[in-house]
Image (cartoon, rainbow, N blue to C red; front, side, top):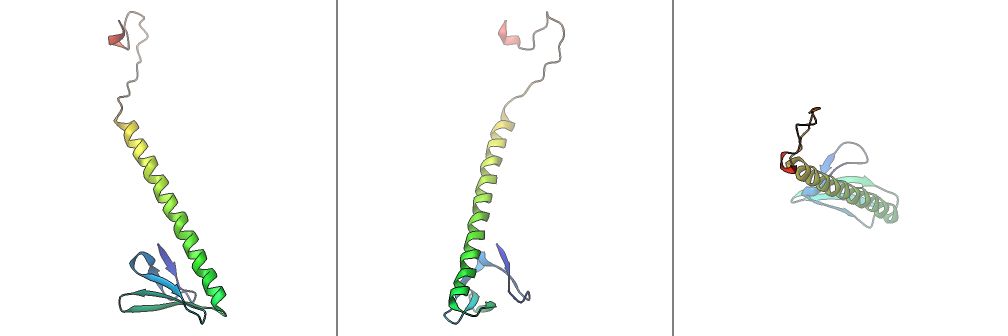
Length: 100
């Protein structure tokens, strides 16, 4: 999931690192030796609220991904079924040859 820093200078993929809040109200993204300040807030409480919002959006994204995967799986099952359209108007001709 991509998130953008408060000053709009950075976009980071949080899948590649860790987002954390520090006691001084700073929200940081870390990945290896990379450290990016995503935002500075007036209190730790506000920084934690930002983390809560990121977590909520991330969880919602995962629910959507899971739901789409389930729907795709159901579509693949349906797509594998044979669907035959019968256009015969002749009562002597059966659309279902095994039914005789």
